[in-house]
Image 1 (cartoon, helix red, strand yellow):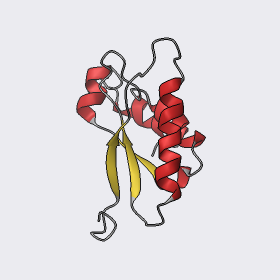
Image 2 (cartoon, helix red, strand yellow):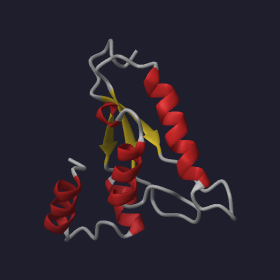
Image 3 (cartoon, helix red, strand yellow):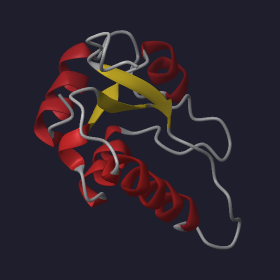
Length: 112
C-alpha cells in the first residue's frame, strides 16, 4: 500500500530484549524477520528502522546498532532509517547541541 502511494518508507520500531541470558537472541530474531519480510518484497518503498529512546531492554538506540543490523541482513538495500529526534534526545544520542557530531557519525556509518 505504501509503495502504491509513493511513500519513501514504512517506519518500524526496532524491538526489545527477548532473553536475559542470550544478548544476541533479539538481534538474531530481528535479522531473521527482516530477511523473511524483505525476501518477499520487490517494491521501491524502504523498510525504515527507527531508533529507540533507550529504555531498559530497548535495542537500536545507537546508530552503530541500526547500521549493523541492516548490514547483517540479506537485503540491506531495502532498509533505511528513521531518526526520531525525541528518542535520540531521550537516549542521549543527541543533546540538541551536537548536530555536527551526530551527522558526522551518521555519514561515516552510512546511516544517511
